[in-house]
Length: 272
Image 1 (cartoon, rainbow, N blue to C red):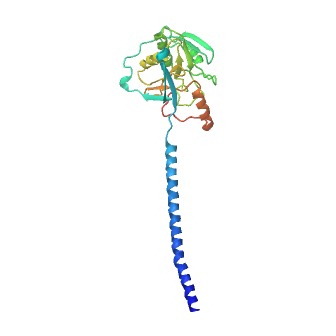
Image 2 (image 1 turned 120 degrees about the vertical axis):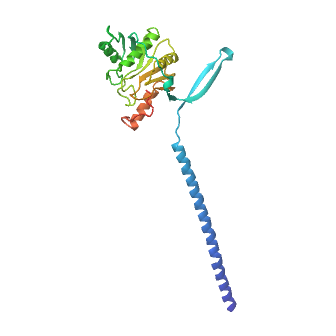
Image 3 (image 1 turned 90 degrees about the vertical axis):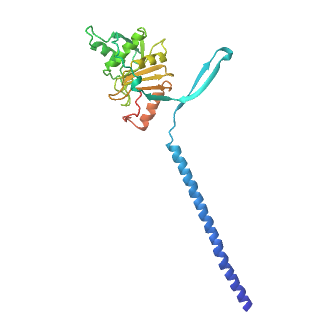
């Protein structure tokens, strides 16, 4: 009987001794797993944060063929869709612009109109009737709204016409009433133009030479036109190359309108 009592006590002591040890290991293991899980979740969170904050730069594929015949090689590369920069004062025109002839021959496919006028009267003042005729061609194609366009823009249009032999100029886009307020098109002080038979690089270079300060000049290689504008008062000159294709800006405007109607916030770098 005494032996049995000793055996029961021994077993009881054994259980009491082993059980805490096992429980301690289990707790330690559970804590270790918890720490590992927390560490993983923190790492994932950091990764997501970085990926979320990282700005994506839109790029387009550009290809060009060099050589001819069997030696012709086609090379492609990806470039930023939009490339813009400010212009140092030292790079701007310092000489005053010569007075243009005033002659403007303009065609606007958007409104199916054409005009050939001189923006000056004989006394050298602006001919308001001629300016009004051009304003009609510059009207917003989406709303039909007409605004008095900055006459300095018409003078630059005449200088471009004079430089390229008085050829007809095609107005791709003028005043845009249904546009964000940061756009110079919205303020009737911008134009997108092209001339049949004249390369846009040549047009772009000449337009740059007219800038004595406060102008924006852009080139759109894939759409085939240049942009010329007068910046808002106090804004410096700006240059850019936009590789987006025809219609891409209107699609972007449509998407943005659905998300944030109005789009009256000022753009960081007004370019159009």
